[in-house]
Length: 401
Image 1 (tube, one colour):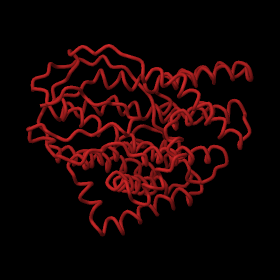
Image 2 (image 1 turned 135 degrees about the vertical axis):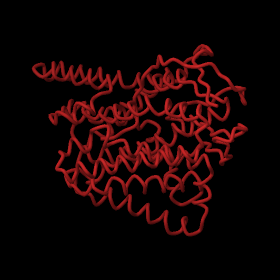
Image 3 (image 1 turned 90 degrees about the vertical axis):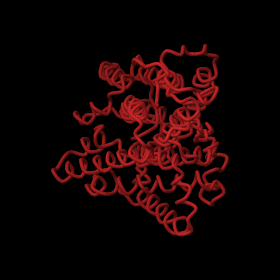
């Protein structure tokens, strides 16, 4: 399934800052922090000079994560709802939006994007929990299935290297206990490129409008590629897992962030027709697909189902961040759903391992995964997020004129 996660340190060469900073400290670049404030744009440059409303903290975004991971766990355990695998697409759209928003906020505050800080923070956020979960998977395999341990160890290595999606799209044979790491791979492969693309476009004074159009073209290109492969009879594994056919939800999230940066999302979602007609229709479409899709094997899902779902989620997300008091936002902001969303990364990591590798009964696998994720979050992940870190040297700061 498609989830939010992953990490990679970077040794990319960076240029010296050539424009003055407009703030003291860059904002956090942790994609798990919807409370990271979007900085109002005070850069006088004509590119990315809009002043959108600050994002701030939205409990509903954590609640949306909670809904996503519940859909995925239900699909894993009971194949219910039939479209529960689409919960990963929700993760992807949300991740693309938050990451891009934070990158644009850092650029507005400092006049630059610090790649090293970005990758180190993602590593501290994502790697510790991943390594603990993979280690548990290997221990379970060594104790319970020694004959299959070499294959499990290879699959674990592929997962930690973030190439599971490529392997699974080529070789359909898949190890259920660790195969879900394909989505971590897809996301991190994208985030190796996206910050560099932003830096390159900003250096060349590409306007936000031109970049927004370019990102929209990329979304359409992915849809076209997947449609052509579907009509040509490509396998489900090729259509669902390959990088060139699975990244459109993340790119849609990036597109939404660019539109939010320009103030377009606020203007659209405060329009009466959009608020009372378009947003409810998109919410109904998203829920209808989650509840109505029977499984992943139908060709129409790849022809038009995934594009419709991604756009519908983006519209609903835009409405939530624009109007935190809306009924949808209030429903998503419920306490237990928000609490689940805050540990959704760990829940996603642990649930298939407990269900498929440890053979925990289906009904018990969900609370067990939540418990394991809560422990991992408290005793492993939070230690790395909160531990003091020395300031990074200024050399990796990249100019974004």
